[in-house]
Image (cartoon, rainbow, N blue to C red; front, top):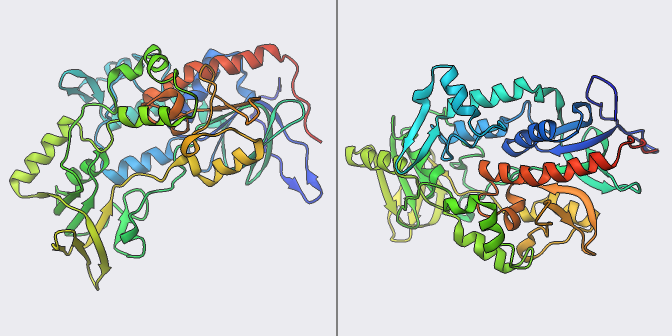
Length: 427
């Protein structure tokens, strides 16, 4: 393994070919919740040396994307319980709260364990990052594609050069591709909550489109100081969690999901039916109801059929011919599918990776390695939304990172133990 005390530098691409590239044992693509958590797991639960681990992410610091999204939608607390965080010990966040006199930031949930306030969660996340010096492993650049190497490893191509590695973990989230309804794509005053929307903008009336937790969080925040209408296609429904708790159990996942063929429509349907999409947790539902009764918030059911930009407002025409004229329209309508993300498409083509229904990656259920079309093995492992077909409905969330970490760390540790000599740099 490399002996330098500093993380390997990324070399450039010369006009005549690829320069000597650093050799590392693992590259984690993505510095969000999944990438940060998995990096700590790799350091703690494998023989991987920290000099042989690199986190590739284009943001200024780890978790930046999560922080921006939380700030934009007005998140006050997490939906996940206090045992789901970035530390490896399930009770580390609770211990952190108690040690800093912040137990009151563990919020009560009816018939379910407490959940952390956002500030507590982020402060503990920063503590995890600092305690493990994970920020020193971060390389601020964008991975553009990945190639295989003759020695069985991988070559990660970034905007700043290449990194040769024995293994790679994809923890890329949805890649910033927000889903904006077609009627709003050419209207300046229609924005996505995680796109052009500025939460600090001075407005007096906002229409929020959506029926899930993000729309509800935004409506609760904006209605504190302005007139807000929450418009959803269906009546609001409440659920405590993203899916039933039994989907946190790997045996249940094996029994209910893995008996279907990998990457099949059957798996996709099981996951879709299990996910509580477009639902609002009860504590937030109560807040919305209180604001509605006080007149601060209107909750309407309907669908937009047309949007036009006027001089100082947006005009929305609904399916019942009602017209709304807010200062701005903010869509909390989720993301485009990660399965056909351009980066994912390039990987699949370059590495001949197998995909199934709607582009679901065909993963090894025990290791989360992405299999090839010929059922071969490449040391490319998947966490997050890309792993829905194997990890189940919690795959994109923090519990999914923990379930994925159990499998991925074991697989990469096996690679480290069975390959004692360092890789030779590519020429």
